[in-house]
Image 1 (cartoon, one colour):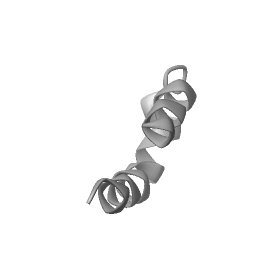
Image 2 (cartoon, helix red, strand yellow; image 1 turned 60 degrees about the horizontal axis):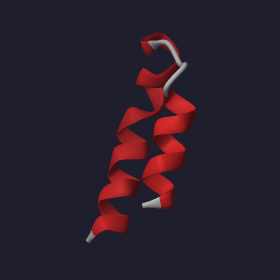
Image 3 (cartoon, one colour; image 1 turned 45 degrees about the vertical axis):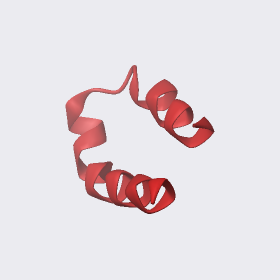
Length: 35
């Protein structure tokens, strides 16, 4: 829960241009944590 909250807080003010290159890595690592 804390990791997801941290990602949301970080990405809240990011533009899509900044965040898009990192999305695959972020989502795959979150999925590993949730399993």
